[in-house]
Amino acid sequence: MEKTLILRFSKKTWNKPVIHGLSKSADLVFNILEAKVLPRQEAYAIMRLEGPEDEFEKGLEFLKTANVVVEEVPDKVLRDEESCMHCGTCTATCPSGALSVGPPPDFEIPLDLDLCVACGTCVKVCPVNAMQVFVI
Image 1 (spheres, one colour):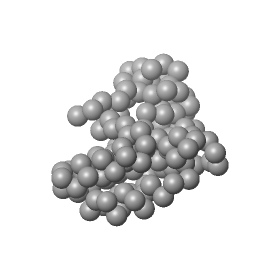
Image 2 (cartoon, helix red, strand yellow):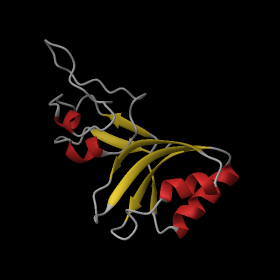
Image 3 (tube, one colour):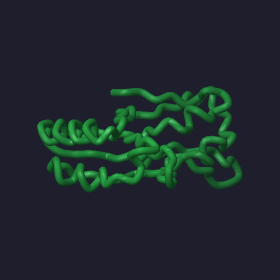
Image 4 (cartoon, rainbow, N blue to C red):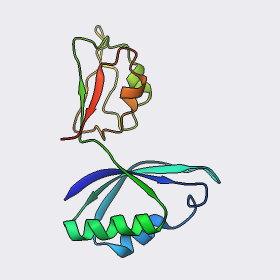
C-alpha cells in the first residue's frame, strides 16, 4: 500500500515527536515531501507512506491517538490544456518543482507528473481554473 498524506498538527501538537512515534509504531517506509513547522503555530507535513495494509492501519491509529489530523492527498493533478494560459502563477507555489517555467521563446509551463505530489496548491492559485486534482 502506498499513499501520500497531509499530517496537520495543532498549536498543541506541533512540537511533539510524532514522526518518531510513527516510525516506532508501524513498519512503514516514509518520505517527507514537504513540511512547514513554526513555533507555537499550526504545522503540516506532506508524507509518502509505503507498507503493508495492516502496518498502514497501525500508523494511522498512532497518528489519531497523537491528535494529528490526517488528510489523504489526491493521486493525480490534471491540467486543462485549452484553458491554461501558461501565465506561471502556479510555478511560484509548487513545492515539488513539478511546475516550472520552460525555456524561451514560449516559456510554456510543463507539468512533470513524476515530481508532482498532488498537494493542490496549483489548483488554488490558477486564475483560469485550469488545474484539477483527482483521486484515482
